[in-house]
Image (tube, rainbow, N blue to C red; front, side, top):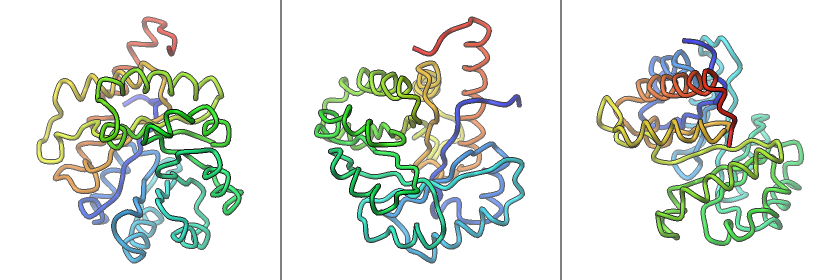
Length: 237
């Protein structure tokens, strides 16, 4: 497989804790692992970090530490992690508060609510990156509003030369099926066409039956989409 530009984020959970499964995800091409502190405990996080340390890697793999409450940041500091994904980053004041606590962090604000949508420009200004968290957005807004918001937020974030991650339900059917739906494949490819910095797997790799296969499939979709873009000289929109 050729080197792809769009990064892959894989959430690690019970389905991918075993070292052999973790290694298969590494071999499939992950660039980031995500620790979701809404689930699990510090013993589980220790096991994830140990797997990362011991894995046979051909490139650097970073950790995204996803938080809802500030009381879990001591673990972040203790383990010298760099990337924070801040859940429910509804306003720039909250973003600045977290940044003040961890000034050396790379802070990714998750846009998940109508308040986050309304305050997007200010949140972006004080963030190092943005995660378009479509799952929670879809619980508080009508679903048909999400695609244009995704496109708008991707464009604005790239204009600021910041990281943007497209997340949630990208290959959701692969939780219990070996192949994604055609709509899911189109969803991942469309995110690549929009210029997203990274695409993210959540339940697919944390809880599903086929975590490594999900990463493999996502990498293939990205490769084909990027190859088509290069051949057609399609600019990121």
